[in-house]
Length: 501
Image 1 (cartoon, rainbow, N blue to C red):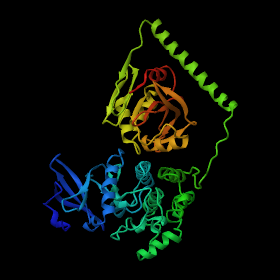
Image 2: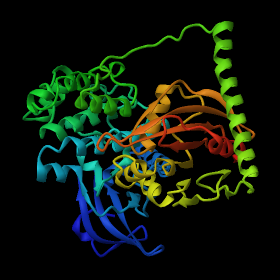
Image 3: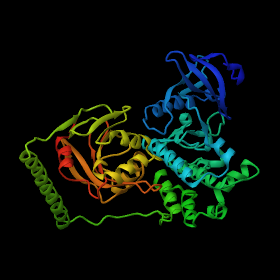
Image 4: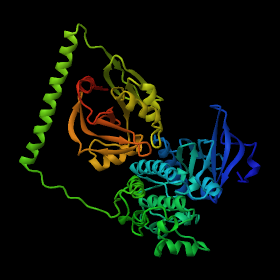
């Protein structure tokens, strides 16, 4: 098939009927197309036919596009199909997003408001860290590949991802994968690459969002690539004076020439940038923490508080049951049945309601209608309704949230768990201490506690949670409340009756 951009409109390609051009670049053209098999419109990306000449590229493209398609993440554009047509031309069909990309937004508005920048960066970072957890590297993070559907952000163009064990560089057809304006030094030098190249590119995007210009602007690509290799960008705070100077240290680390000097994850970079902008002390230097040796005494000292808490909780549960019996009524409990989204059955108070949201998570609460949109929105959620509940009836600002998760592992440390929860929950996440070993039903779990805070409104919810070791994916279970500590008889009953399946 000869790839002539507009000549394909009205034609059928690989079973899709092409309606219009959505966008184009040096390597591909993206069309709006109709999939008649499912009566849905898709974004159909058709790669330049010259790329199909490279057997290694073709095989890797199909394999890794299908790997991306298997990743379930709200900020990664869903991929429906990746293959070659009858003539060998590569194509990828994905969800069509009726919105604009970040490039167009910045072209229309210039530098973005800080709150909007933070919101977009957090969602892109979450998508990238999830891809990296699956050993996939995007390699072409740029504004044109960041799609905006209202407040929701999608990262797209995963069709030219690369496994972290690969070597960066040219294909056999001399097609350079990446965009010079956002390209990391190790990618330019064709060295071994990892997720650090995506963090570097994301830092370039952040710089551009906040200043309206790239960290390096040169007259030609050779000078531009040299700048990435050997020069330092102008301090961001010099270009946007209302930003504190702490942001410069964050950007210097994320744009470090050596990948080892950058942040451990994209989310860690975005968090540090957000903290610097808000006036908190950011983490601008790599830190290696060596935990103190565990001794018999220290292990024993940790067990005592856990045992005491368990005893107190058990007594509180008994007290509640006795109180209800003495008042002439037995406890009334509803039961959440295990679902694909939330594979844990548990009991909850009879005056609560329960729901399963779009096969993504399960939720039980006396105010389920108000909390469901909060948790479904994730980053950038509107806390208005929940804040009203917290202020008017804090006892009703409570509930249970359950979902399966690919991004959280039972063995995660406090810092790792905070970063992962930041991608999933509707606000800033802070844990009180390191997770501890527990059991939920018949499964091993790690218990932790902390709070979710909305910096914009000051809203705050506390939680006690569990990462439950399940197959094929772990499950996250949170008991949240408006009080400073989420415990007591209801929490104990939920935990006691929880049954992972």
